[in-house]
Image 1 (cartoon, rainbow, N blue to C red):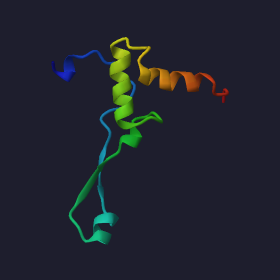
Image 2: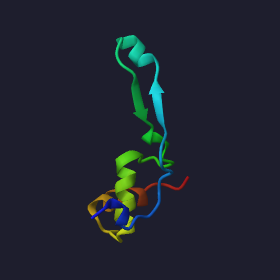
Image 3: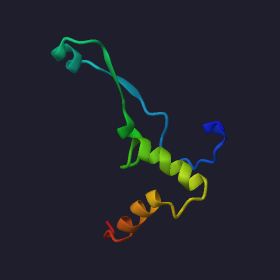
Image 4: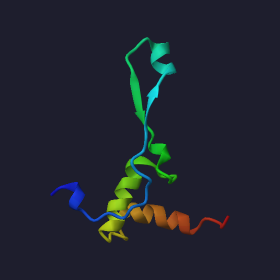
Length: 80
């Protein structure tokens, strides 16, 4: 099965940008480095956790362990 065919609930702002690192390769004297900015998904979770959550919610897996780990601690947080 192809991932494009799986149900998905859009949570993140994708795709995230890829940026060229300038100072690190210069300091190390190494090759060009690129970094994917998964901290810019628009959520505090970022990256693979957000993508996984999109598929779990899309499939209706609201009681999956991953979702319980996010839901219950968040339920007890004070309102801002």
